[in-house]
Image 1 (tube, one colour):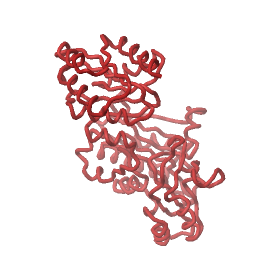
Image 2 (cartoon, one colour):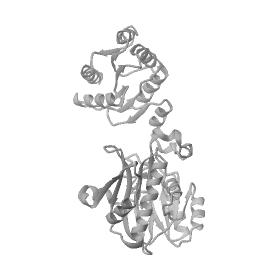
Image 3 (spheres, one colour):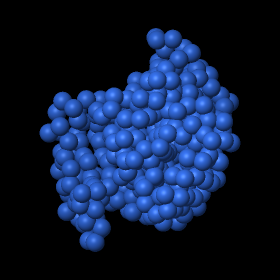
Image 4 (cartoon, rainbow, N blue to C red):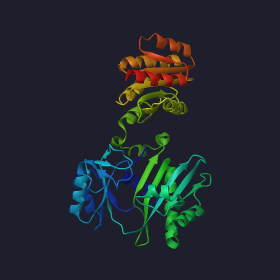
Length: 399
């Protein structure tokens, strides 16, 4: 689960991270009032969407020459003008795709005299099961280009949770940023606060870009992107309250209500599978046969009729889907129960695209019999390779 920048900053401030003063705003009037509470004379008006690249983004409704989603203002009138431009309009960035995201919230912050911009992030290092720090002296809007063109400017190291964050980790961050003296101490303190926040909130990512060094010699978190492990949110009711469902894909949001793991993709073959590994293999073999998966959808090990029906509805809600491949390996989840769910779901949603089903495992023969006697145009498959070939052939024939 991701949260907005202003929420991330408020959260990190509780752990001691240095944050500039700022206030969220949902209307133009609130944006002006937020600016009045800041010392000025420089304000920053920032669009709040769950995507990076806001500063370089463009608003669909304002034309190609309009300013981006992060703007400086030197008066309350400018704050009002920027807020009017942004709220309710669609911001397109490198991370949103062409559809963009509608801006419904703003963050008005105090300006800062920036001397240098750094990059500092914490991630889960899945290879070592440790917390990885990613540090660079080249922070700012072009960090992606830095990673691509000059990767040697990005330093990484890991912290073992068994020992926790130690003083030498703080010195490592400071050295990577080229800081010394009091500024090195500040860098170590910032790194420690982020590490504490990372562990305490079960975060998957904390990204600070930029971490600014001001003309006054102070480090300041100017932007923050924070995401949490969804599997751990049952421990964090306070974090769940920060969820903004308007920022989430409607199909993925609907899938979460049924405990379905769903991710929309750009292909035309809908996939319904139990098990993430099997789902990945299913998508790969569809591509090997010349077409592309429209989604990743894992119904898990305890699917029932309601879950299968919901899965079908979510898949078919995508107008790009031209066929569906169901690939189920029955273990805890018995094939006959799944087959009954598939038949009921297909009838309920009035299935109008080709459907190929491959079942294997517990009660497989009973499951195949249910499909064969359903009266529906369900194409059975013997194995995964056979299933992929059949769904591709069915879709091409239907076209």
